[in-house]
Length: 224
Image (cartoon, rainbow, N blue to C red; front, top):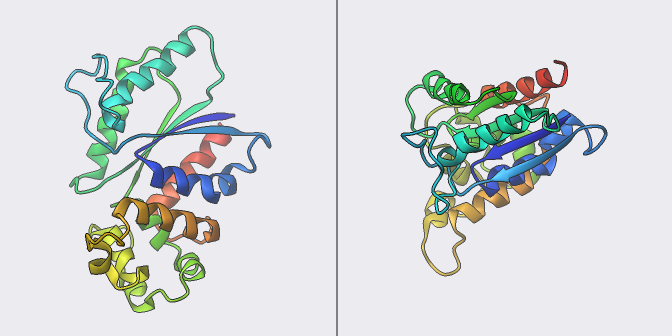
């Protein structure tokens, strides 16, 4: 099977590429393949789902209807090289995960025929997946603050990346948010967390509900 994977940015790209996909799908080309398409943030859906996207807007949701229609057109022409499309986004501060997912699923109504698509949402943010595997965090960051990690309520709306920063970043969140020249940007730090933590993750021990929904959804596709 070949999977086309649409994500918000480089953090998700790094996390999926650093071991998560291989743990679920096996080594690349043995036998499955995938291509990850990172965007420049999540953005928002266009008012007109049939409209051509603004080429200057590289956010995921803005381009999602057009991308899904593109896969649909390939199917209509008899091109079955793409087995499934996986869309991964953060819930962020949206109040209703179920309603948000339904909004995404409804985009398939503008596709004829609709591609085989799986929509998954990290709650509240992708860092919840890292916090779902404390052993992986401690392997990547031996000096991580265990009390903070243990007090995290899994997949809660609490400022997830900030919580992880307090646990693993030297000086905590305040030091990370420092705008001095030597302070890394938040996005760069998020990519570093993904690169360091995900190689240690055990997909069968993760306690994040949204991670497990991602994992089981992908595994189900393999057996359809």
